[in-house]
Length: 257
Image (tube, rainbow, N blue to C red; front, side):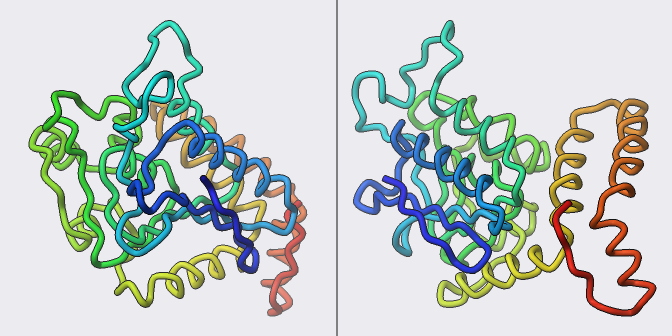
């Protein structure tokens, strides 16, 4: 249920269930996890792009028509192996930049996927929201990621009302980085990948790790961690190359080491 494509230095993961609104089930979650594993194992890969098939829906959230153990709300609290939890943990641990190419509506768990990515480029036709309250539930599983991206009152309004917002509003509140017409979505995503690929792979990887780690730390802990990280980064080959290239006024030749 996940189609994989290579596009330059990016690995594209496509949720391939357009007739089901690219909804999440266990097979989709495992497919994304496998795709991230393969991307990280490829030394030529510099970014991962997550998108949905078609131009209408990025991901409509959990597959409410699933049955049995595949049901999105059939969660055993004593079992930590829930597939949504496994997917979100794997996305959070991804060492490569993870970009959501939001080709259409991203609702419920689909909006959670957008928030679990590092960056997001959206079609101006996309809409976003967490309508779970309308069926008597709440977006608990994705709430940690929503809270990391959205302002507190915006988050509460969306969760408590179940309303959807337009792409322009999603850009205004920081949910997505860029909003473009549908015909420009692929080019805008490619341009972002190219920009990331022009930077030091080591700096990108360690910098992303630092941002995510310090976000959950107290100030003193974050400052101590920052000192250790910068001491580590200046010893990398990429840092030496970057400084040498700057002094020689030439483009750097990154090794990713």
